[in-house]
Amino acid sequence: MMVIVRSVLLVVCVSSMVLSATVFQGTCSSSSACGPSACCKIGYMRYSYPNCHPLGGVGDWCRLEVIVSDRNLHYPNNVTIFIKELYTGMCPCGAGLVCARTSSTCQLPLPDDIDQLTSPDNAVRNNAFDTVEDNSFNEDGDNSYGFF
Image (cartoon, rainbow, N blue to C red; front, side):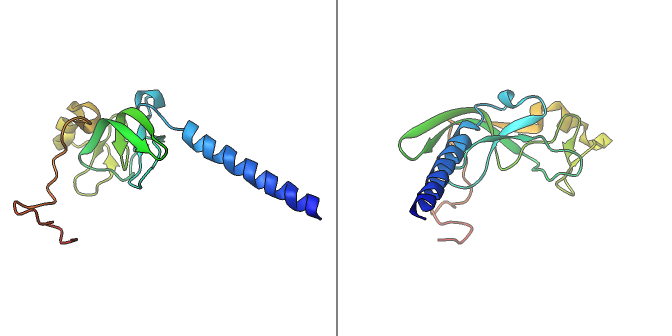
């Protein structure tokens, strides 16, 4: 009986070590490493790992101004990784698609949307070493959202 319990514990420990190593090894280093139909994206949670995700297809949710940046990501145990062309939250729409203003979904462009297709990747470039504009505080330093 004791041998079975030890075997099960050993399998559980080894499995969790393999899974945690796989999560870290599966990260992307840039959107170009993900290929032409995907981007390197990170979620909003603390210590999220960047992974390759497909570009938005017709009907997929999108943001009108997708921000792409080069960033250093810091994790526990002094682990730092540098990511180029990193998207936060969601990838932009795929080639030939635009983010529709009325529905926030990727759609084929209408004649009024042609200007969106001329901007590279429909993205706003943000260098990680530049300061990011934060409009959440007013001139008095108060949080305009009322969270504090």
